[in-house]
Image (tube, rainbow, N blue to C red; front, side):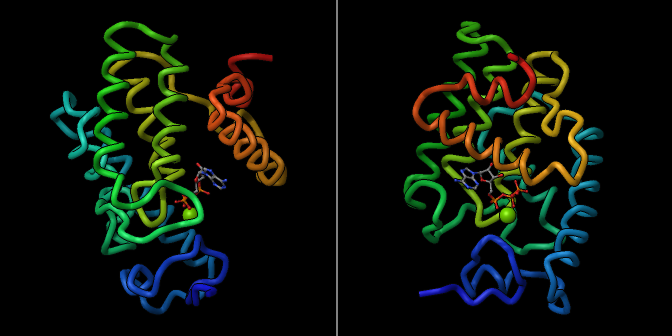
Length: 199
Ligand SMILES: Nc1ncnc2c1ncn2[C@@H]1O[C@H](COP(=O)(O)OP(=O)(O)OP(=O)(O)O)[C@@H](O)[C@H]1O
Ligand SMILES: [Mg+2]
C-alpha cells in the first residue's frame, strides 16, 4: 500500500512519523527543505561549539547529532526507526549493526586499515546502509563522516558536491547513489571517484 504523505515528494514516512512534524502548516517539499536546512545550520553550530569531543564514535553521539540537526522539525529526531523502509536494514537490527559499525570504524582508525578518507567513506556508506532514522540519513551520515575526518583523523572534510552547481545536482546525485550501490558490492572505488580521490 502507498504511504499517504502530507508533504509531497518526501522519503515515504509512516503516518506516525509524519505526525512528528513540529510544523503542521507545512505542505510542500520546499517549505520542509527550508525548515530542515535552518535546523541543520543550528545543529552545525552546536557541533562546532560542543565541549566533549571524545565521543564521536559512540551511539549516543550519533543519535544526539541527528537530534541537533533535525530535532526542531521532527519530534522523532535522534531516535531509531521502528518501521521498514525501501532503503536500510530490518529496524530490529539497527542498534546491533550500528554498534558493530562504530567498533569497526574505531578499529580502522587505530590500525590505519584504510587511508583516512576511505575510513570516512566506509563509515558513511555503512551508516546510510543501516539507515538508522526515519529520514535525514544522507545528510546526517555525510556530517558524521566529516566529523570523524576532521576531529578524529585531522583531515579536511569531504567535498560532497565537488563544485557542482545546483543544476547539475540531479546528475551528481545519481552518480552518488550509483557509487553507494557499488559500495554495497564491496567496491569503494566509485565512491572514491565520486568525492574526487581518484580520477
Ligand atoms: N538506493 C538508494 N536510493 C536513495 N538513497 C540511498 C540509496 N542507498 C542509500 N541511500 C542513502 O540514503 C540517503 C537518503 O535517505 P534519507 O532520505 O533518510 O536521507 P536525507 O538526508 O533525507 O536525504 P538526502 O541525502 O537526499 O538529503 C541518500 O542520501 C543516500 O545516502
Ligand atoms: Mg530524505
